[in-house]
Length: 371
Ligand SMILES: Cc1ncc(C[n+]2csc(CCOP(=O)(O)OP(=O)(O)O)c2C)c(N)n1
Image 1: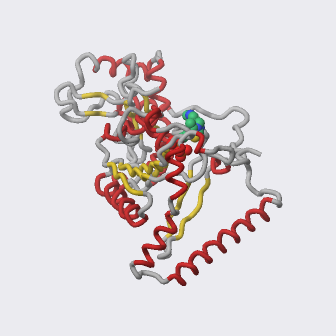
Image 2: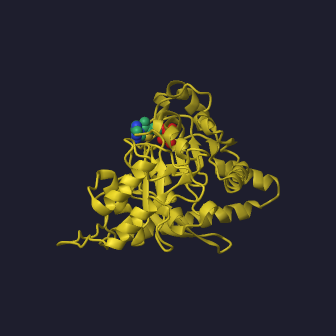
Image 3: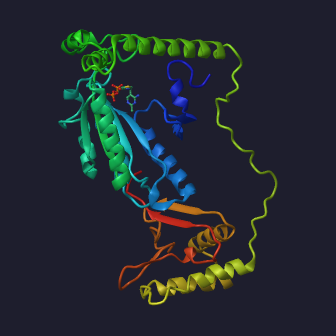
């Protein structure tokens, strides 16, 4: 069965989180393959697509949260590429919260062998993201930093990083004994009391709770774990109602009609020769736009014009079109002119955004050079 074994979480999940206050929020966990950090840009794409559908502009109502390991965050190139996407018009998501679970080891590799930077989070300095280094043994400091990070994201719509400095008590997996490779660190870890014990002691010491209350909370929690464990065990012995492969819609069969009315063609042709008032089209570009417009009426249709007709007719049928890639707007080979730049003041004009009152939105973005 796909996703069985020790990596069930790789399948992702969707649900609704209900806070103690009763507030509800939709939460989804992206399917995450074993290739560390590969999910980062995928998650950003999911968040951006949801934001585009919600269409609430600079509100950025979907919050991406990325969890990283310290070795992977410092080592994987896709982390830098994802940070580089974070403020670009075609890709931004209004700020991502990056939480690095910094257990100070990557499987068996110590920081001295896994990075040249001082901190595992230094790569995020490339976008001047604030980075909070916080002691994982201090839950209240962690909560404070989490709130601060969220408030920063909401106020500035930029990425923010939490470096949760902590430790891994046991091996990377069941068969692993970290004292083979990090004996000194693991001597220290063995002597440490757990975060729960340390925090319980400080709450009791401060007089915030009594010993009896602490014991009661622990009992409740263990009962919850037992209950869920039993539920899961019983559920797994019944046939699963979940499918394990994506549900692909059937391909349309037979010939689909793709013809468009001649008025649509004419509207697209007109849009290409009707710049806004006061807009100065580059003198070498204007004849190309005029040729395109004439070709729509009389032929022949070249590749670039064919594309524009396809996009334009989809837009007039109410389907949004998003085009993102290297030099997408002009077209690498001077072929597209999805966006035209004013020769005098560098203003932008996108003819396909000016077709009809009720057309769908057209987005054309030049992308970062990442491939
Ligand atoms: C791209 C990639 N390289 C190597 C691995 C194998 N691998 C899995 S976990 C791991 C160590 C990761 O260390 P860290 O990022 O610090 O996260 P931790 O497991 O300590 O939370 C390695 C090397 C992988 N899954 N993906």
